[in-house]
Image (cartoon, rainbow over all chains, first blue to last red):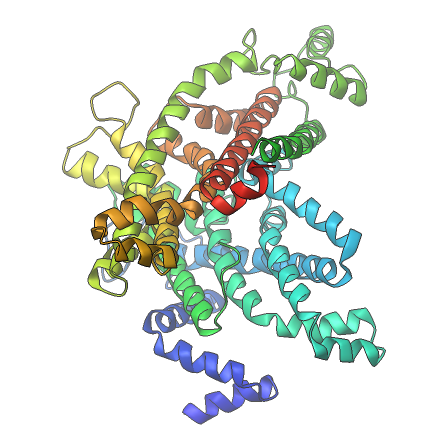
Length: 295
Length: 310
């Protein structure tokens, strides 16, 4: 079992021992492993929700109304008699999708931006990073609210808006990495071989900066999910008939006096996921020995 | 030092200008005019309204006129509350929000700082793990979940504290302040722990101990100052987060503050209000960032030497 895992990882990374070491360290960190498993479990459930969900997403039962958890409805039902577990599963699909997609957008912009600034250096670098500094100082939470108001509340815009905010730290980290890497011999060797800058950045710089990127990505996902839930709670994010954990929490908070389970279960789902991601991120940071530059 | 402050002030100007410009054109780009919702306004009335709000001018002129107003501290009239200016609405909402933010910040600094320092004194023992686990919960539990849960527990079940309001009943400020401050207490706990751990291994701490100072004096006199620099640097960004958090907390606890106005303005499409509040809040945030940077630099002797005696 042990060797199989190690083999597959080192095969993927062409035998660099860094990743084997990191995996061995990560495996000793119980909290991080717990986070990893929770994350895998929730992702699988989210992917298979249409087949796993105990009830249909839009199935209402107005005669039933809100009921506390029971054998038929494990997490109870809401005021329309809808199964809460089903709602949470479908809500999780959206929450996780926003988390992963927006982080991917941030990753793409941030890594590209930072790599170019760090590699080209000089005046280009100065201009690009000044822009990042200026954007950093902008109150983005307010801007996202503004964007959602101005352009209506659609999910694609939400992905883009959140992604566009979160790339800044990624760009800074990437630039720092590339700057220190580009003075090393193997990059000089690549330059003297006549490789194009694009190839050097893609094949030599980005892979070598992967550690910090992975760590920071893992820690970006929870902050993105929190942002989505924040917007949905205010009514500016995901809109019915779609649902998300943030939206379920906001409905739950309205009726928590009589039906507390409507608040507690969606809240637990979101908090558990954020826990898992933060633990995993912290564990990865230790395992890959990344000195935090983001915080 | 003053050169540093001046330099940072100079940097703040393009940021604020960018905020104003982006916000202005975003709001103007929004589909649907502010008076579209009213049922069949007579064309003459609509024209009069538009003239009053300068909507009949070309966009560039509107922008310049707005900048000229801003330069005089005039944020314009509200679309939705005729006869009231954005300045008045902000003035009405600001006291509650400022008070809430100040209390939350106090909660965050006091509890977070204390937890972090206590944890850092005996790393990897129960004295470290317990406060740090609590901090992790604080980071992962969103404000909009913590608030309702606290209300459920202390307001509804135990009936110890009021569930809503601001300054109407004794004790009604406690739950909102804790709700808003909790997440920042958690971050501050982590930052101050890390900062203190780094400082406590420095040579000058060993010197202080070698002088025979009692441990509490080593911590309070020598370590705290350096160990808390990351916390001070964090306060600027935290301020922006606190403002955004106040949107949620003011909604949950029905506090008549700026955050609730902003969310309502967003729903009402009260464009001048959105514009005015955004500009106002952004300027506040930029200034607060500046303040926290200057404070952090002042606490750091190396930076002070670099800018100070020049």
